[in-house]
Each structure stands twice: as structure tokens, then as C-alpha cells.
Length: 264
Image (cartoon, rainbow, N blue to C red; front, top):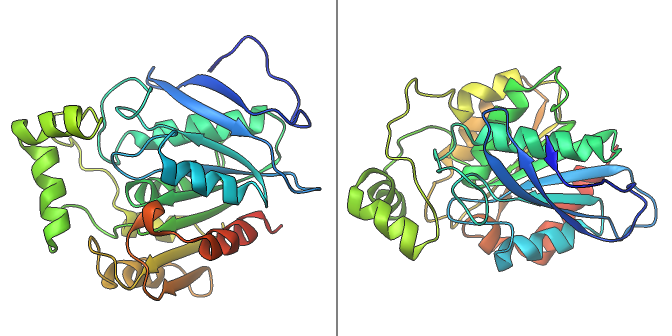
């Protein structure tokens, strides 16, 4: 469901905002930006990382770069930015992504690809596995700086994330310091992990991108994701000198990502 008075055609060159409603009733803010490319039908839906939002500079920069290759839908996950609800840190966020993909299709795009960063990377992987054969399916998926498994605490950066998510004081820091409202409830049941989702994605094209200086997830995470895919169905780009997620994605990488996502 889209809370807008009217939806113009995809040939209208003006960007627009909307409030989407997920299957569990959460209102999600989203932005549609037509491509600057001369001819393309592909829409790319961009999923940000934990504590991000549709208006954060890093996501705006990524959306601008991707517009050179495809139409772009960006949005704020639940508990982030102007969206409602509380963050479940990768669980019910699949419903947010599904709402954004449906909106892209309602705007007339027959080919929709997804790209996610960090937490958003885990979400696009699970979405690609769980929404196959539905009206919210993706035609290609790219996960950047994504974890392979849940509850990872092997780096100082991830131990800080777990403190923010699991401790009452941490959630206050998340809300007032990071602008992220976090659900205090534990997962029940524990959702399908990214590495468990990967075998279910094929034959949808899959790209895994990871930096060799990622301070959150070491290289065994992207390698595990690609190893879980049926042979020949996933690509791995290991980026030299890259850190973590959309903040570390340079212009050259974003251009390559846009080309990969937009190719028929």
C-alpha cells in the first residue's frame, strides 16, 4: 500500500516521496528518483545499513551514482529516519524492502534489482530467498559488507553494535545519539540467516561485495556467502582498501555496482 494521492508514470523526470505501508502495518518513508540514463527500465531498490536512513549523505551519494544506470528507490528501514516502528536489526526489515520493491513495480518497472549495505545486505539476501515467485521478488541482488551469520561478536565494532542493540542504555544511545529506535525484544523465532538464505536465491543473479579493511566483518563472511551458492550462480568482489558499507563505497565501486545491477 502506498500513501500518496497519485502516482505519475516512470517517464516523469521528477523525484517523489511516499509513505509505504508494509504487510505488518508499519509506515515506511521512501524516495523514487528517475534515472539520468537515456534508456533504462531497471529500478534499483537501495537498502541502507544500521543507523542509516534515506536522507543520510552516504545513501544520497550512492543513490545519485546509481541513477546514472537505473531508476532508484531508496527508503528508511523501520525505526530509522521518518519511518515508523522499531528496528528489529534485520528480521522484519524484509517486509520494508518488499514494500519498496512492490512500489517500484507499481511505478511500471518490470525489472527490479536490490542492493543492500551491511544490515541492508543481510536483508536483501533474505528477501531474495523469501520473496521468490511473489509480486515483491527481485531480478538481481547485490549485498555489500553483509554478515554471513547472526550474533557475530568477533570484532570490536560488532561488540559495540551488540551493546547498542541488547542493553537498555545502549538502546537509549541508539535512539537519541544515532537516531535509531530499536526493538527491545529478542528474535523469536531466530530468522533465516544470510548464509542459509543464499542457496535459495538461485537462479537470481547474486553479487557479494566486501572490503578487505572492513572493521565489522572479516573476509570469511563474504567467502562463506559465495560458497553457499550453487556453483556458478554468485560473484564475489573483494575490494582492496575498502572499509564498511555505504560510507566506504567509492564512486568507482558505485559505478560498477550500477552497471552490474542494471544489466539485463
